[in-house]
Amino acid sequence: MKKITILVPVFNEASNLDKLILKLNRLIDGDLRSTNDGVDTEDQDWNFSLKDFSWEFLFVNDGSSDTTLNDLRRLRKENNRINIVNLSRNFGKESAMLAGLDYALGDAVIIMDADLQDPVDLIPQMIYWWLKGYDDVYGKRADRGKESWIRKRLSLAYYSILQHSTRIEVLPNVGDFRLLDRRVVEALKQLRETQRYTKGLFCWVGFPKKEIIFNRVDRNSGKSSFKLTSLINLAIEGITSFTTAPLRFATLLGFFVSLISLGYMIFILLKTLIFGDPVQGFPTLICALLFLGGVQLIALGIIGEYIGRIFNETKGRPVYIVESYNEQKA
Ligand code: UDP
Ligand code: MG
Image (tube, rainbow, N blue to C red; front, side, top):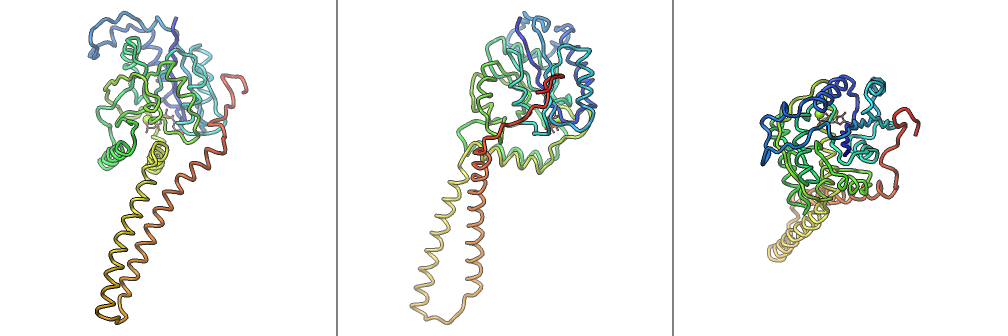
């Protein structure tokens, strides 16, 4: 019997756990045909049932400060599908996902959020495509739900920059909600970088991919733990971990500015030679000075980003530390 792991990184999600597990159990133990409406499949040969698989619900507790861990342990007593990896502190969702991939037992792993923003009803469809031979079946959001206009614009602009500066295709509006075959999981486990941009890593490892469109709903309860600043950080992470294009940009900018300066230098020189030198041009001097200073700082900043990454990776620290697996101390 094939095993499927549902991997859920959780950080302060106590208010969502019961409902999530209830929904998952209902889906698996219920009748597949009832959740089969409106499903986009080439043909309707649903010759499998979710009961044909053995299931693991793997929760990675990412240093929650609420009752999440206790709730998980309580739920585990009633439900032997549940396994719990408890990290020693909050390492962030990206690291928690890697921990989950390391501990997952399934032949396929489905990654989803705890807040029910990723509809469980999509799971049969993912499995359908997996059985058809796709190794990475991912959900693509048809719309981005209740997000502000500016945030939507920014995120689209970001994807297009990322797209143009790297050969690896990073897909817009695709989150971490996806089914991965064991092959992909093994490939991802080899990528142990500490500053992770998992969304790009999925694309980096390749393998046949299949897209499913879905509507992302709003959080069931609680607040998103990603604020605008952490999204900006993630965005810089994404660019610096997949492309050195900004360094190239700094070089080009340098050339461009030098060229203009050279032109201006010749102009000033000639002007002085022909018309003499009535001491003037203090404003010009200041402008040039400030402009060049700015350009230099930008270039330094860009180099700094990369040096920072080198610094972090050379320390060779593990991506996460496990405090306990189920009830056992690690
Ligand atoms: N999460 C996590 N560690 C963190 C932040 C979030 O494991 O440091 C989990 C969180 O519990 C949820 C998922 O990552 O299951 C997505 O988080 P959230 O809903 O806050 O993000 P959003 O949906 O706004 O992208
Ligand atoms: Mg969410």
